[in-house]
Image (cartoon, rainbow, N blue to C red):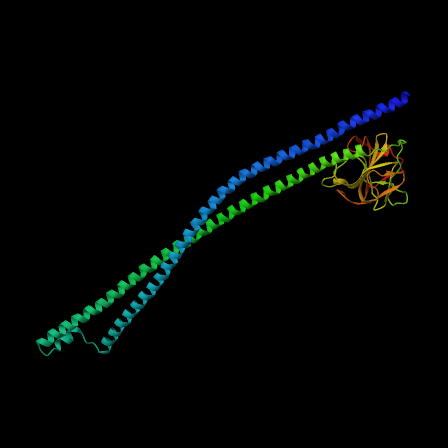
Length: 383
């Protein structure tokens, strides 16, 4: 009688501890969720601050665009003036050339007429009337010659001035273009800075939201698992010894690729505190370690395809990363009955069977080293 009472008390304690365990498990997940949500709020606040900076950048961009538009108009005006100046220079050069040709013709004509001088013309006058007439004609010719020379000099000076003005305006155009290019580069830099900030914050928000979604999923899974374990119970009594879940006919059945306990995380998302043993088999039958009832059979986060069995007396086994399974929740199974095929689903670095033992259940208890509760062949480490 005392033995029965003791067993009942142990079961009650396990059940009570398990309820606290699931509460603690969900509470821990909720705390982690709260931390990530707080981190996301901080990122959102930072994003709001950056958005303010982006607004300032937009104002600066608008100012640059206005300045660029003004500089472009100025460049257009300068180019128009340059074109006019070039036309004027061409015209002046043409006029100067015509004047030079006219003077040259006159000089040639005088040369061809011999050494005739103004005095010869005067002395050749027949009377006073022709003398006066020749005098005024000579004066007119001299004035005309001088006017041609003065005109050429004036036009040459004007041409030179126009050329200098043109060079000055060309310099202004070059400086204006350089200023426009500088403003354009600053504008592009501002736009790139804006886009980089937006992209960076968007990526952070997406990553944090993915974490939030993952924690919410884990919380829901823990709650569902708790409901499943409370719904399905094995009515039989656990014999106290579990069988090896892989047949000796399967290659690598007696190798362990990862033992129970602390370890370096083999891949992103994998646990660094391994609560199971990994048996490196490839797509081979998996068998129930003892009589029991299927608590759950389906997909479970990082475990991939997953089965949990209640064997009674608070003992549970779990099988993860399965390729497929042929049982369902609520189904009674016998020791040695095939329940699945090992695989590589979930967070996994390669095909293997993830084998766990719980006292109190996945969500209502704690994990123990399966090798201490399971009869097994002589085992070898894969590494």
